[in-house]
Structure formats: structure tokens, C-alpha cells
View 1 (cartoon, rainbow, N blue to C red):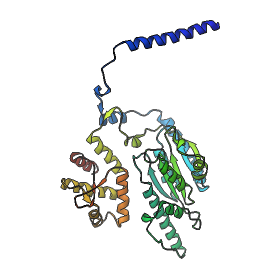
View 2 (view 1 turned 135 degrees about the vertical axis):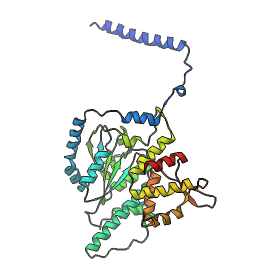
View 3 (view 1 turned 60 degrees about the vertical axis):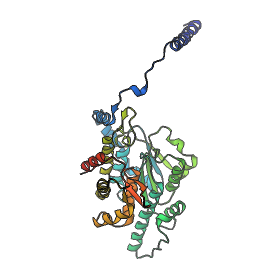
View 4 (view 1 turned 180 degrees about the vertical axis):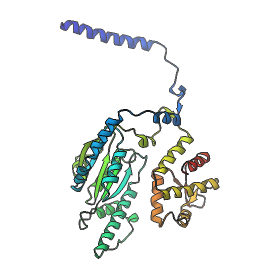
Length: 361
């Protein structure tokens, strides 16, 4: 083909493009708005999405089986001090939870759901310190050794003190906790300060991290030091092609209207993932709120004796752990009443709250 013919063809395309732009700008603009669209209810849209039949199930099952063959290798790499970072298309939540429940049975495992809108990283570190302390007390007790007493509660210590405790070199090197982080690039964890704390946490000698990412720009969260020295990532491409069912619950669907029924359904799914005792503590709050509709909520000081009386918690620490879970999942919020007391309330309408109690049994 002659070069002159190519130039003429390209010129023709350019001329037609600008001519179409000219004609388009001279016409009348549409008066229609996005708000005029009759958007489907979110519950209906989610129900329709849930009914989509999965495809290529045999191939996906074979793929997941191939990942399970890597479990011994993953454990070896964790013992060598690496962190495992899973990436690839599809939800990796089920894969990581299966790895934790079947291959990490010798270790304590803490799960962080980064896809939540907010995560209290300080409470996570406090929980890790308490778990490690209990492990050390148990080992020293069995060895008839002397264990120094903690000078102050972990809840009142600074982040630096907590991280230093988790990194104390004189403790047994085989005592470590594995942290499983679903979506370390999620909205609850992606701010710079939280990522810095997670990197410091991963570099502690008694901590190992297994995490997943889904955002294409997730690596931009870290600098070279964080990647190679602190997190010390060993990257694994593990596409699962699984739908983001759980992760998607915490994001409003763009093409749908929200509803109180959907809020109750979402809360029910979250509660069903918690322990029976946690569900019962939530029920206490819900029943109080329904029987005292004019109150600001149930006073925090009144919740512990009621929960203890029903044998749901053994200490204030256990109750605080449940409340932290509720707040992280935005099931419960705090506000002050007229007497200045901090009260707990569930941000759901009465009808939705009644429906929620029915769904969780």
C-alpha cells in the first residue's frame, strides 16, 4: 500500500471525527438526568446477582486444589520469616481461611477484615500482645520458669511499647502469631499511618503476616523498605475467580437504592460470622433498645453485669473484645446521654432491628 494512501485515510478519519463533534455541539442537549432513572432496589439487585450460576466449576476446583498443595511450602516460608501476599482475580477470603484452619493449627491466628470501612489497629495490636503473653505464661509455667509480671495493662500502653513487646528478642523464637489480613489494601487499612503500623507489626520477631490484595494500585501503599525489610513479602499469584460476596456487602451497589431491609440483612450476615456469645451480647443491646425506645441506648457500665449474669463473658476484657468487633462492623455505635454516660446503640430502625433479631434466631 502506498504511503500517500495511508495519509489520506488517516486524514479522512480525523476530518470525520471533528465534523461529528461540530454537529453534536450544535444540537440541543438532552434534559434527562441520572436521577430520573428508576433504579432497582438494592435487595433485588443482590438477589439477582446471587442467582447467577457459576461457570467452569471443575476447572476452578482443580485450581484451588493446586493451591492447597502449596500449603506446606507456605508454612515453611512463614517459619523462615517471610510474609505471604496473595494477589489475583477473585476473592481470596475462603482460600486464606482454609489455609489458616487446616495448616496453621499449631499457631495462634488473628484475622483482620480490611474490607470493613474502619479497623481499630490499636485494638488489634493489644489483642496480639495479650495472646502472646498468655502463650508465654503457659510455656514458662510448664517449664517451671519465672515469668516477670506485666507492669501495666496492655490497653494503657503506647503503640511503640506494644510493638516492642511483640519484638522482644529474649523470648522463645518459636512463639509467634500469624495474622491473616483480608484485603490489606481495603478502606479500613489503606491510610498511610495504618500501613506503617502494619509494616512495623510484620517486622516483629513473633509475628507473621498472610495477606491478600485486590486493588491494582495496592503496591503503591508501600515503599521499598516496607516491602523488602518489614513486610518481607513473598508474592503469590492465586486467582480464584470467586465472587466477592462477603467483601461486597460493605459497599453500596452503584446501580441500586439502599433500604432498611437490606441493612438488617447485612447485619444478620455479619452477626452469623461471630461467636454465639457475641451474638447473645448483641441481642441484649437490641432487646434493651426495643424496650426503651426513648433512651439514648444502653449504658456501657450496665452491659457487663447483665452479660456476666447470663454467662456470656468472664471478664471486662472479653466484653470489650465483643464491642470492638461490633464497632468495627458498624453494628453498634456510642453516644452520651443527658447524664453524661456513654451509651451503646444499634443504628437501625425499630422495624429493621426486629427483623434482624428474627433472622439471627
